[in-house]
Length: 182
Image (cartoon, rainbow, N blue to C red; front, side, top):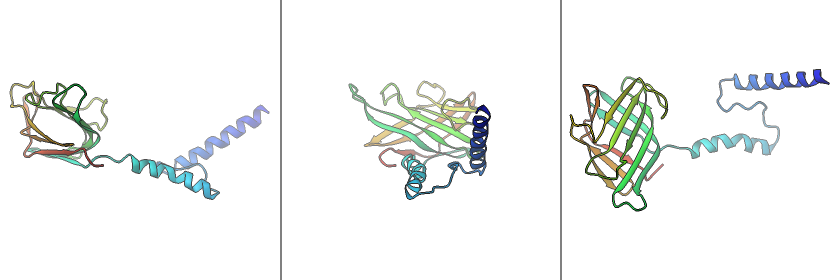
């Protein structure tokens, strides 16, 4: 009996390994054998399309074009606050093709101080350690703070200058983020 359980386990593992080795991210271990099974197999594609990102955001700089697709995009009034707050982040690409993770936020709800922007080069994940971090912060005294304009669910950032030690990365146009559509 024990030998039968081991054989069944080995066969199941072989079947799974064969399906997953096809190089298809949603490879299923068995082809659908009934009409209901094909509807179940179509569910991953429906789930993927429901997880769409917001419109692509471009950041034109003196080093080239950075871009990202926000996976989180929130612009609005927080309860008990009179200023609009925002938190936007997502993965994208640097001008040289490296992955980036970009975040833009206003944590103190004060538009006069400007937003905090970060471009993490070398990772497309929020909590992974990047190779390089470019920061534009309202607390950076060597460059003027970026200015923001909010209209509905759209944020525009002007005059951003990113710093990394003594290096500058100057944004050469407005950064527009539309959180109203997916």
